[in-house]
Image 1 (cartoon, one colour):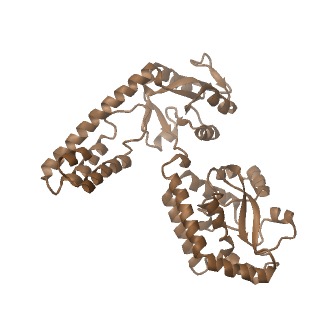
Image 2 (cartoon, rainbow, N blue to C red; image 1 turned 135 degrees about the vertical axis):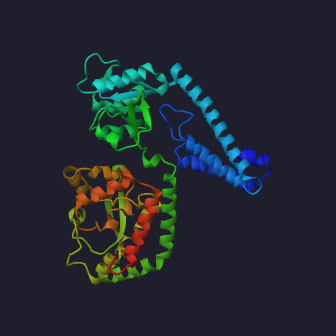
Image 3 (tube, rainbow, N blue to C red; image 1 turned 180 degrees about the vertical axis):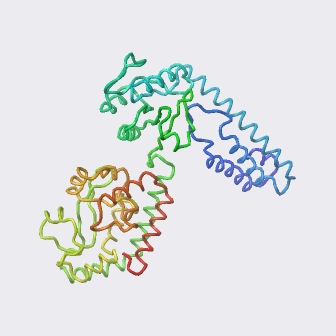
Amino acid sequence: MAFAAANAGQSVPRIALAGLLVVAVGGLGHVYAPRVLPSSLDRGFWLAGAGLVGALTAFRETTSLIVVVLIALLFTFLAVCGRSVLYFLIRRARRRGRAVPALVVGAGAHGQRLARNLLAYPEYGLLPLGFLDETPGEDPCVPVLGGPGDLVRVVQAHGVRAVVIAGQGQQSIARTARSLGCDVYLAPDLGELIIDFVTLREHVRSFPLVRMRPEAQRGLAWPLKRAMDVAVALTGLVVSAPILALCALLIRMETGPGVLFRQRRVGYRDQPLELIKLRTLRPADARESETLWSIAHDSRIGPVGRLLRKASFDELPQLWNVLRGDMSIVGPRPERPHFVKKFSRTVPGYGLRHRMPVGITGWAQIHGLRGDTSIEDRVRFDNHYIDGWTLRTDLKIMLQTVWSLLRPGGG
């Protein structure tokens, strides 16, 4: 599209805008999404739409509408032809041994049927090296390389790059395989309920496949989260410097020397961090600091400490944690090691919170789950945030946090 616009004598900004819009519309329509067996006609309407938007942008002021439509049709035809050539080369390469080494989890009847079809039709690009199963069926078409607990060893030893789960109840295997850099697919059997709940875009000889979403950390938006953290933390520290100075003076007058409070917490991927807060209470000893759950109603807190906690000013030094990279602005709140061990044993899904960098505020906090509130509810809210993370969600949480601090009764 950019080439056509340039040959028509259009200006450089208009050429660039037309090209960018073609790519943007294609992205919205998942035109560039990876496929197990790509087809040149997949997302054809989105290709045509991208061509029409690009042609309208590049040519509408100097060309009749009929010619613009013809240019869009020509663009679509050439795009489909180009994709046909590319996909033909991809399929041929796969038939000649360039398929991705894959592991099938579940050696039952369904898993074996799937593996046999992958072996018979290498153009799908997944070459099963073996099964993972504790109780495999009879006469497997590829060897059983171990049980579910051997996933890491098998992936590393055999260079596995894709994992196909032909069964249910394998959440931990799927997440572990994804963290190892594998593409992960769920292959539901015929009649399973999940087929009625998801849009199926992948298949192997009409065996449905559902591709697992990649980790947020591997997405293009992830570096923007860190850039936004740095910008917000730096701005917040500069703007709040007078408030911090005043708070430090009041704390010094109320509790004596040592206005900052440092405490060990558990952060991203279970890594320890030293969280910094303004001191609102001087604990009796280190043991009390590590194991006392809540000090919200502690009689030892003076009026200054209560005011700082109510206004959340005691959290401001954590902007330095964000600037250092220990934390994010938005994420699950970090907890002390004592309580992480306790809740990991008693609360389902608690350990999954550490898949995302911890934060000053989060999805649970803006829904009132802070202080002495339900841990089960916090875990559910935090994991919901992680499972569906987007940069837009972070912005939303930041705005709602600001509003909760400014509104009457907030904090």
